[in-house]
Image (cartoon, rainbow, N blue to C red; front, side, top):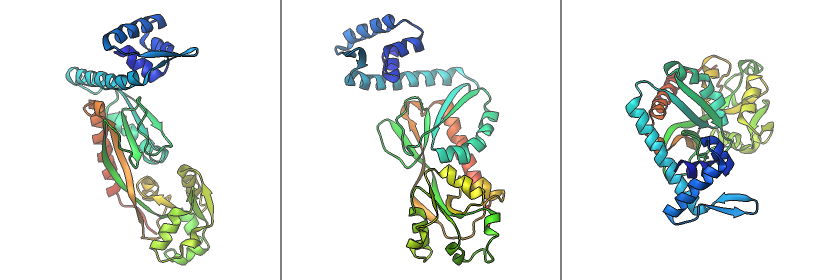
Length: 293
């Protein structure tokens, strides 16, 4: 079982052999025995390479879930405190804007947990088998995955106090005619916000477009302009006065952030404790007042 799961996940017999600390011939022998029991081919030759068959790959996914459930059950009945590892996938914006600023508190409560955070630019991707739980923007339903909303998204214009100080009337929408508008990828967010506020959407089609929200965040903090920002992910900057919110109107996205967890990890005590901690800390962040000019 461990052999086929490792080969499917690693994509090569030699990688599986190295992971399981056995020889490649031992892996091949184990797979041949398993083929005899199952009655179908597990590995086929493709030129100079050995590749796992589609039917065997599907079987290996079931094996992976079963092995994870066994490990989780063992940990639950033998461990008094939380020990082990946790691998979390999060969008770059969430990892940079919130998770890395708070995660040390989780480790302070559970010092024996080894934590890994992986960022994915595919906002709703949940396909990496190495991940214990995913924090996604939006969701793509798939089998054997539990998905639950984490928080909705509120977008509003944000800028630095120094940049806002260039204008006489802070809350006057007229300042946007002179302001440098900062965008992520395209003009959509500013167009939608201007339409909501009774302004001409075409007035949003100017300024600077960046390919990554983290770059937009850096530019806003540096006083380079005004951006449509996320009041949760940029909440610490708002609370501590590095960013200001000049207008009250905000966009509420049709989607938001989700926790997505493979079924085999739902009872993993580390995953359960992480989810509990994550929801509590986010709620505290949302209840803390932010500064307006």
